[in-house]
Length: 412
Image (cartoon, rainbow, N blue to C red; front, side, top):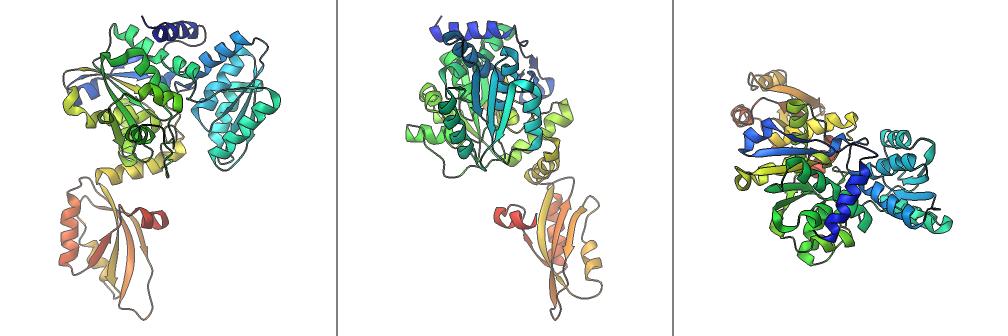
């Protein structure tokens, strides 16, 4: 047994005094859909609803072993890492100073405070995470505190590898294939370092933040010029140096890009069919099953559902994006003649399964035509082809803006 495997097993055993192992559950719905034994490693069921408390626990244990007098721990995070650190500060009865961006949603601030109680102080600094991180590191230097990295730390990586220890013990063997989300790389590098090449891997990144893919192409970590922050638990502009060193021999073919709108459809499916609440990053592994469907048939596959910290105020946006991805909702601008009866003519083009979700019309004086912003929901994507044919037959013109990202930011 390698030294890393021994350390990961030691860390996992120590965690049992703090929280139980998360379930490994065979999912009948996904197994039937993909013709494989699909198991979900439910990291969304930890006390803080993500795997992040594992790395925080192991890193804090190591610091306290080397320096028992260390009483102040610091982190910078707007999400799951902050909650994991807060939980462990309360457990170890030490002080945690948690830096969060000013723009952090109140729900995340509240949950972090709940987990840490009187053992944490939350400081809101900076509009962007880089400013928050700089403030946290400066504070560490000033007061001699211990900084807890969210992913780019060997002790954190070792702690996250406890997920692999539990999978092996619960399954009774190594799975044929494992699907892991990738943000900064702490979880994926830990699991890969534990299992090695004994099984197949799919490492999933949000399409708008593929820092691992960029690093593999360049041969070293590189900073993305732009990141879509929707998958906030995995939208990282630069993968960690330490985590990438453990993933550097991974083939680019093992990396999957998950479109943000498709992730929304997966989140809704898991909620509606299975009653499982997943945050966008937590749904990445399940979402990638469609990308490897042909490869995994007949195999034993583990998907790590990495987190369930979902703010339900985001549900309307998730539903909207899922409908647009699946093709049952579209937005278009209709050029309508300004005459009595024109609206009735348009309404007559709608089919029995078409429903108006949005309608905005501004009558223009001294013009023959006006523009209408229309949102239509239907039951099947193919209904739109028939609808558009009827609109054209009625001598009306339209522009489909459903996938126009620039225009959509202003009108949708």
